[in-house]
Image (cartoon, rainbow, N blue to C red):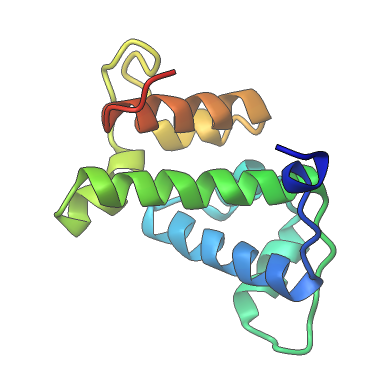
Length: 134
């Protein structure tokens, strides 16, 4: 894997599409606006503008923010693989989870701590449910 493949150059438009998609997923996960901002490390104004759907607005996202968007999209994809029922696909992140890592916490609450490690570990633990080996 080359360095370039680890740091893809996305256009502002592509980043905005990813951001808006991640925000729609977070909405369906029942994330509050504060939780969504912490998960994606975006400001309240960016959150508001991205949700408005203004086609003339663009946003510059840094690599950390793009990685966070990627984790949200990948968690969603994994949940869609695990569950057939949309209530589970979208409800799982807001449900108390008693697996070892979560210890009764909701995956969404863990992700909303705001640090990349919590987001990564949440993804990793959910991905493991589908049989992925780490």
